[in-house]
Image (cartoon, rainbow, N blue to C red; front, side, top):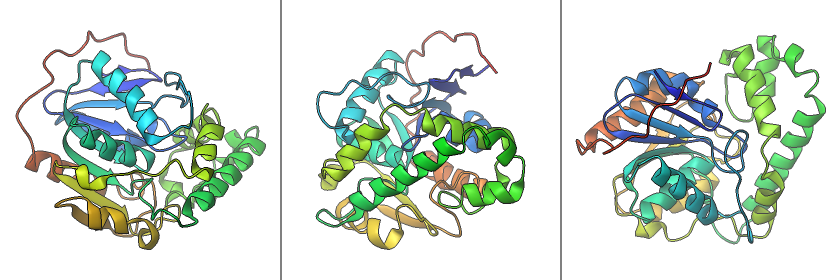
Length: 286
């Protein structure tokens, strides 16, 4: 039975695979893949600190990738997870790469990872402005959301910036994605870090584990032409692949494609070592 709460999804057995969602998301972003992945691996999908249902993010300065990684490492230690295969999307991809630098990763699959833009350009400001607009719109339409999400055409339009086929998201999942995004507690902190030039990921050349970077071909938030260059140049031995015809959060656009992208890499670099001692399972909730 899965261990399932707002802060954590955990199910399955075998090689530990940690799934990390993007900014303003929760572990629910991985729902299309969870059953298939949990049939093969010990799947650990936390909600990141400062996000809806997750633990608080304690800040002394900017909300950087390094600070988020510090909190995540503490959480993984509490769960008894030492090293694992990390799979991350967007901000979660950046965290996966950061944890690889710290020696926590057996392998990495980073799907359209954030924070890898060229330093000195205008991308951080553009991204901050995008999220500010999206959150403002989501807050303004939150009361109408239960009605809005019932129509496939409206779901398609509502999610067009993060996926190409928002109509494939169920009304219940669509409502959850909209509501949890505005419940994120660190929106202003992350936007400040972006605008201050403190949100980029450094020292990609220090990654020394098998790393696959999979970029969504139709990514409108982190366009491949503007964001993939550093990862391709700087990560030693990187396996760079393009995910055709999908958007920034591709798990709903083409679930089988994303599943293959993950399982091929994890299976290729499996160590045969499970987590030594998983914590006791708590009562599951629906």
